[in-house]
Length: 95
Image (cartoon, rainbow, N blue to C red):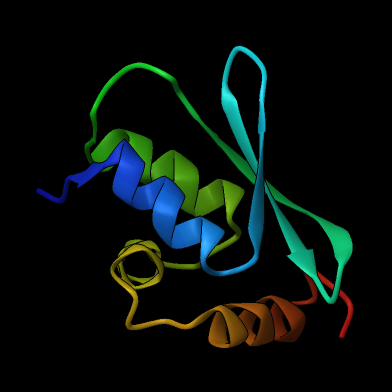
């Protein structure tokens, strides 16, 4: 069972091109070359750990094909450039 701290998820995504906006949730939107994309996720203010169920939701919101990919993105073996390349290959964002 995988689990990651919300703060770790947020920090990892912010280093990979996501920008934060806060309402009743913490929305993270991917920006590429200064332009906003349609790729976004949100994290709750509460709850310190994200288990399998919540990580699966983040995975889908980030348009990643496998659970391992979201863990690679959070744990940093996958760089921001690799992530953007994957999204372009999948047709989720324009090059």
